[in-house]
Image 1 (cartoon, rainbow, N blue to C red):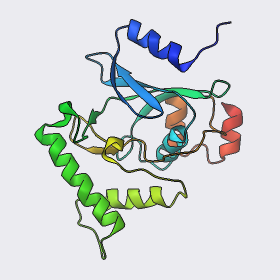
Image 2 (cartoon, rainbow, N blue to C red):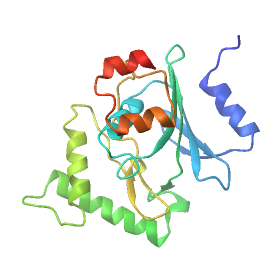
Image 3 (cartoon, helix red, strand yellow):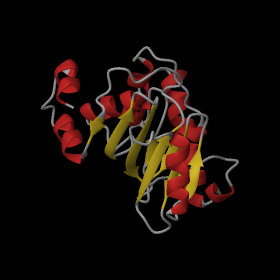
Length: 200
């Protein structure tokens, strides 16, 4: 049986006509030109799967966090593959992110960061829910990274925090999560993480 590696999988996606949308230190994201979904392939183990499990269980998937349709974790090879909603960059140095929507999203991100770190009193009503979300992420006890590459934009204009946890691993993550499994997790059907991991 052939060993699946992240490099082989990325090459397979390219041969199938999927273009690279972007990437970072740990992963790349691919999509077909007209698809509203994207495929994320990691190069190494990190905390993103745990972030997705947490945001799904807490009800943030599809709101302030990405909506993920499936997740396959290759623990023996130390990487994962996910099918998720397609999002757009807001990075200031990205030529494709100079639209009025992206510029407005960068300004909104700056307001949220300022309110979450420095402001006293209650944040403005339009950003209060996301400020609360950012504070919850910071309270997880992980090393976080909220640079503008980890914030993206939906087609409806809503802002998404994609990957704010810098370092870690995914030990304890179920090997495979499908749409049904994620829906069950979102509906709080699985409250015991160890029992859930055994089921997967």
